Length: 443
Length: 132
Image (cartoon, rainbow over all chains, first blue to last red; front, side, top):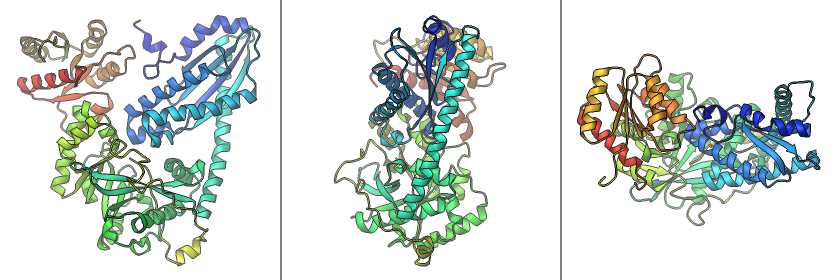
């Protein structure tokens, strides 16, 4: 059909709202009521930001398939249809109870949503890995439409959807408050542990270093993305970062056996924290610490920023530009930071074996790095074909799921959570020179 | 690629001379070719004739190459693999990022040599075969 794209969403194969309403019209009118569930995946924009649009499309397709499968087997048996709502990160599910059956009640719906969350999250983890699954979070709202023949059906459905959206937003608002409380508790008790993701030499596969990835001990804070997002909202970034950095540094002494490097994510904003100094970072051997600075965050005052970097450089710390090539900025801004390592943005690695433009960009970046005396790290390597091309192009180091699947025992020191330590009052910690440490994101 | 039929190539360029030169060159190498002289026409032919490789000029009046590429790649009706090669002066980083953003698979920098263009079409042909 020529206009299929107006009726069905290309990524998920789900019908659009108009198509769905048309196909359900008769059944809804006969039954006289309709249950609307609105699902919003509030953190899916992060997936696009980190991994690029292709990955988000793939995750949306997995999500839609998993939701369809789950809802198909749920107690909501009877006429049902799910639609892609705004072509963004939300879906709407319509349930028209069968004759003789009651519409699902609140309790059933709550149970279904909780089961759905678990099921979809598992499917996403199986298909796309733990890091992406950790960004999955559903906010659901419901509304019940009793059809009034006096009003146009479409309008009643649109109103019902709006009500469900508002309901989901109030769920999200409640959740946000709860998460902020969890974060405060995590900071108070230093409830953070660190996963170490190996960075290996592309040619030999030998472990060269580890990127530290901080996670909250509390379940709601397990995803670093969520944890730092909540911290930004609660103006607690510095406090959280200090704990994360301290935890990550502990790993060098306790868990790295063979002189591997520690790659530590530091937000440019952390450099404004007066407690973030080379001395207070307290690294046993600064030469083994590589500070990663993301290209994504705008650096406002370059000269001042470079001065701060210099102090760390003088103390022996090295630098990596993270997410290099993520934007349109090109190579100039990278050169400004004079990095020792350049970590390529995941969106350039994802499917690189099939895209010659990505290969060309990575080649350019490697040439540039070689000219600058820097080394290139490719993150997010998920397939053998990607690794093969990256080696061919001359990437120095690689990192990603494919090389060291999470949880391989004995392979890496990850998954050895540092136990929660007794709380340290902020002022005492600062007086004692307690460094903060912050870490985000993953392979 | 012995024994496999060569893929159907759609050449899109508002410059008739350019389009015809590319058409003749690729035709001589055995590719089935269709030519479109504008974005709108390209999309119509794309729907109708279902080419597997599209050589797409970026600078065109009306719907430019970026828009056409995006539409081809996002068309839910297109479940077959399609390789889109942008033919353009993609000299800088920004343009290449934009090309990835629109879903393009490859590019040929203008001005190009015909042999280079043929190599590019050939490597994309290889990507279409099920066993890579």
